[in-house]
Image 1 (tube, rainbow, N blue to C red):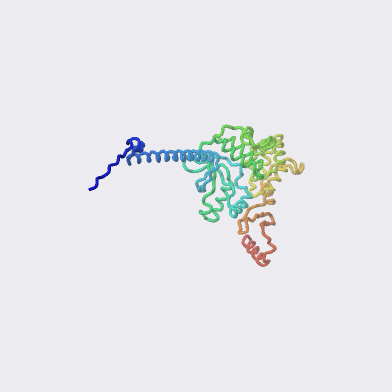
Image 2 (spheres, rainbow, N blue to C red):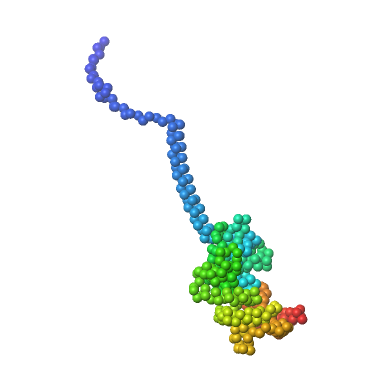
Length: 362
C-alpha cells in the first residue's frame, strides 16, 4: 500500500485574505418607511394647499375690487330693480327716441349693461341706465317673453357708497350723452338740492358738486337754466327741447321782468294738447323774439282755450313691424313718418287702409 505524500500549505492570515466587510445600513421597518412617506406627502399637500389659498385670496381681492367698480355683471330680474333713490336727469314722459332704443336692443341686444347698487333686502337700486331699463320693460310688456326680456344685464355695485357718489356716477355717464339737455341737468341740480338726504340744499352749489367733470362754461349755462326751471319747471311740458340760446335769454328776461312768469303760466295753463313748437313759440314771444306785438299777455277768459284749439297739435308714436311710426295730428293735417317707402305700396291697399282710418275716426 502506497504511502501518501504530505504537502505543507501556508494559508494566509484571515485578516489578510478575507475582504473586510463594510458596515451595513440598518434596515428600516415597514412602519417607519410608511411614516416617512406619509410625512413627505403631507408636506407636499400643505404646500399645494398654501398655493391654492394664495390664489383664492388673490381672486377674492380682485373680485372685491371689480365689484367696487361695478364691473361684476349678472342678470337681474326687472322686478327687482327700484328707481326711487336717485332723481333722474332724464325727463319722464318725453323720450321720443325710446322707440329707437327699443328697436336697437330688440335687434342687436344690450351693448352696455345698466349699473345697480345692491340693497340689504336683496333688491337693487338703479344707478345708471334708466332708458335701457325702460326699454327692457317695454319689450317685456310688448312680447311677454320673460326668458328674453325678464332679466337685464347689470353691473352690481356693493352697498355702502354714499348718495353723493351715486349721483356723480349717474351724472358723469350722462354727460357724454349728446341729447342730454341743459333743462334736464338744471332740474337734476334742483331736485338734488331739494332732496333731504343730500348734504347740499343750494342748487347753484349743487352744480359744482354734481357736474365736476363739466367745463366752467357748461356749469354756468346749467345755473342759468336753473332760474328758468325753478320758476317755470312745473308748467313746461317740453323743457328738454328748449335751445340753449333761448334758455339763456329767457333766464335773463325773467330776472329783469319777473312778471313774465305768471304771464307765461297763464298762456300754458289748460293747454293740454300743445306741441313742442307751441311751447317754444310761447317762450320766444315772452322774450320779444317777435317784437312788441308778439309779447306774452295774460289770456282773457276763454281766449287761451280758443287759441289752444286753433293751434293744437298732438305728437305720438305707434309701434309697427317696420319700427315706430312718428305721428303728428293737427288742425286739418295728419302726418305719419316711418322709415319705409310708401310709394312702393300697392295704391289700392294704401287707399283702402286710409279709408278705414278716416271712417273709424269720423
